[in-house]
Length: 224
Length: 324
Image 1 (cartoon, each protein chain N blue to C red):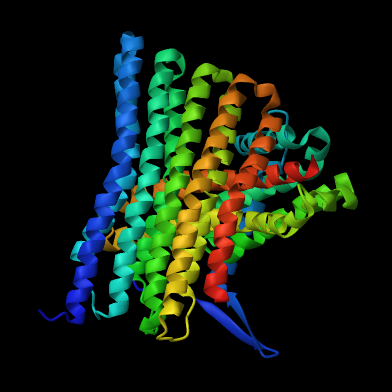
Image 2 (tube, rainbow over the protein chains, first blue to last red; image 1 turned 180 degrees about the vertical axis):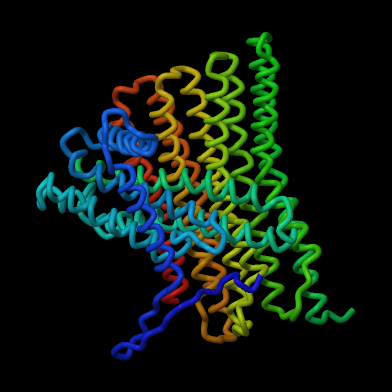
């Protein structure tokens, strides 16, 4: 139970400020990167007309996500953004599933990961908006319906980052806390595997999908 | 009758446990009742498939019950919790945990009854897609539980995290406020998410070929409808983990309590309203799937506008915490 609310941190003093590095989170993120690269290489290695199982799995995932992006953004923009969306989804999926392996933890359990991805999506969406509408039309939207609504519109946009990143963080961290407490109370008998299946596989998949879809939709709201 | 610290801590734990289960029993019962009512209607419409409908009703009710089961777990933990070092601060935290879980279970309980009921109705209408409807119902009602899960997490944190020796004033108000903020803010979001999930089951029964679009827009709609409860979670995290300077003035405590109440109540309406928006969008995507992209955009913009009141509430709470 003592693990609850504790983190392994590396604190480096730098010019009067403390730089805090969450070591475990970085290690887990690198593990996810390595897994993704290995699977990517396996899926694209020795491509053939008659695909091997892993190639068809890769094609299935990529084509599904391409279609979803095309539905929301249209054919032209999908070419630009679909690779990003595929990468985002696969990263989140593997991150959320990583907790199933003993001694590994989900990188998305840390707010820094989800907030970083949320800010990334926000910047990309607004960049896409400025690029397609022009800076004037983009800025004009903040003064809708009346000019003094500007600060509230800005806060509303910023609140999107908070909601998208806390949604993922809250779900994954909540699941792991519930698993920790229940494992402690039941001496790790019977219940924890089912909880891992629910929170890790099921909720993890849904939340990865929701985060990806919201990023796509935020881009499409900005573009059109 | 002398009230020593130990008595006050167990008092808070017992009252908190009672509140958690008492309030937590409200929602799920209503939701399950709705599911059963729709199942009755569905059986009378299509008696041949009564077995399938009955099975679906039981599965739907079992999922809808989970919010109450969370409340039961928290209540039992509060009743039998062994506090190693009882302090008045712990008493406030335990009471807050009970409030958070009790209120937090209401919305998700009522909400997750809707997909169950609509799925029963849908099976009567389109028996061929029964398994698809059950799957969609399970996804929808599981996502509905998110606000209740957030409440449970806040309750567990208040109960088990050792916050060290923070000053009693005004930290007691912060812990109580954290519970109130999360608990109340979860009501609207849970209920609203249920409306969207119900509409998606109805939509798939109407047009099974649109299932992929309907499920996608349901998930996005539910996720956005959960935003007010995420604001509640954010405010309660700040209240729990920010260290406040000691101050015996009552106003400092009341500011923190007010911050919790503000985000809590402020989240009820937007959560429900966003759920209604999502319900409308999901229902009409099933009828007019060609324009799913437009519908989703308009849904999001509408939800963002109706969410602005939750954002005002959160801004006021943050001002109360950081400025006042």
